[in-house]
Length: 239
Image 1 (cartoon, rainbow, N blue to C red):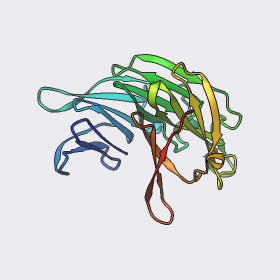
Image 2: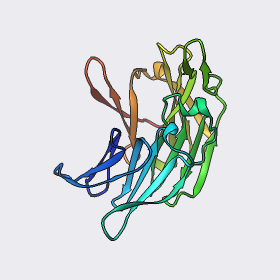
Image 3: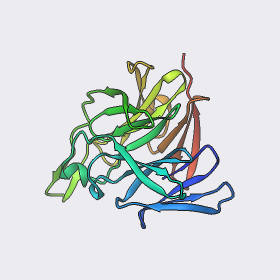
Image 4: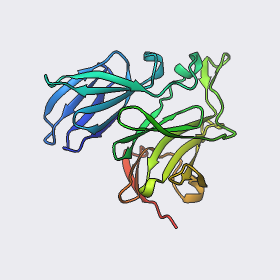
């Protein structure tokens, strides 16, 4: 995972050494900081504030930790938010990660992969709003003793901010783990569900992952891996 701040600095996760490396716009290292958890997501909303989320089994407490640059140019943890809605062994060791994404005007969206829950926070970690929804195939992960692994039939994925406070939420049906199906829910600025669309219906490949959005242009970008890594760009047309 990586992110870019307003000055063009790039924040790159090093999951081996549990740290974030900061590069300037010329790709030169300018800073780094470490933490005790194994990181999964980084969000750099401002050059002096960085938000980190980790794999659940490597730390306890709130899911999102805020690190702030001090007068010595070092980053130190200054707060946390995002209470774990479900916190047990199977959730922690399933291997799936939760998501943090920018919401515009310094706000942050957080989705936990189970249950279907989207929370919006300000940069101080105060909850501004939340969305919950029952989806039949998004069920609590459970250990399959015969297979020796945690099985997950559905996941909540990225929250993607659009113009005028609207929001897309991607989620997956993994009932057939060899052939997962993705969906988008579209919500208005008040958190009311407007419509649901399958990727099959939209003509989007179910193999695409790691979506990001540009709310100013209502544009989505997604990563694919076959037959080689590529990025696809989509325009969201709202009628």
